Length: 445
Image 1: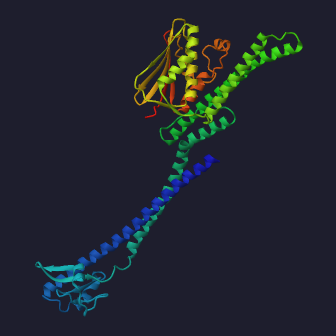
Image 2 (image 1 turned 180 degrees about the vertical axis):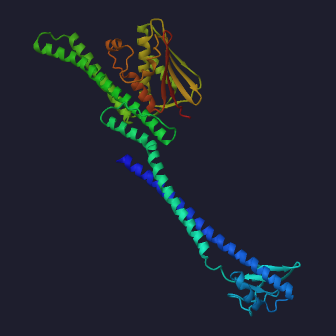
Image 3 (image 1 turned 30 degrees about the horizontal axis):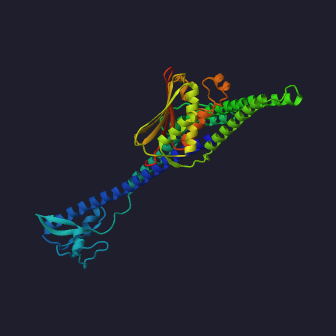
């Protein structure tokens, strides 16, 4: 119904445009033709009149008797349209509104046609009446012109309809394909792509639709994967806890501090997962509460270093801070940003071998401040690097599960940084190390 409606509108526009154009051309052509005929007849009548009165004046050396002579002599030369005035502006041959007793003003004389003999003005011809109606031959010509214009209008309208039918299929084909693709998405098939046929607005529409469909399909896959991962991560600790509780209830296991500690560890894992999911949901909704303060980047990194020095010593990894002097303050929520950096340092320590180094760095980059966590660890393969900030993405599935990680840490870090209107990116080389770079605006920016 929509496509038919657009086709009808398209053909109606072409038809109306053609008919209006032909009608305007016909109107202007008719007016121009009639006006041209009138001007031609006036010019012919003027030429005849001036020639006649000039001949009369040359023969009589005055205008005496010119009035009766014109009435008797001019009838055979077509209709008389002009009156005649002498050099003083007095009417010597009246006609129409001009009478023999009238005296013309200088302005009226200037509007007339001068009668010149031997370089001297001897009189003035004044247009007295408009030309008479067209004669039968002239009227026939005008009628034929109008008929030709009418035929042209009918032909133009027919061609407009034909062109509209032919072009509507070509122009509206992208809309037809888009409609079919949208209906398929409505039925649940989200991965739809339409052919981009042109580089105009319809081509832009098709390209935008393809990008939107691909993004929706990708997000839907991520959502399905995330749901499965959440269910898996919740099920594992719940199975451990419920297994211990059932065994304790049935008396098959004796209650010991070690068993209660095992249940407590699993419960804490559940709590961390729920807190991580809550943080992500608040960030997605734009409701992540941030308490902004002016903070020195060096103080922020020093605080993180102090917190992680025992863990770094345990891993036998050197933990260093490298801060450029004279950096402006950052306008951030320090608790949230410490949460981000702590998560990144935890990952860096996990993948840095004994004897390696993790460096917390702060540098100014143009108008921004960059915080970097650099390690000399195993590095991330190039094919996996673009995905590390996705939710539940795990480079080494078994290692994450064995260490109780949810796979949400980097996704949370990305959400918190973006809530600060900053960016986070990763650079890595296998066997060399990884750098996570956070770019933030200083308070003076």
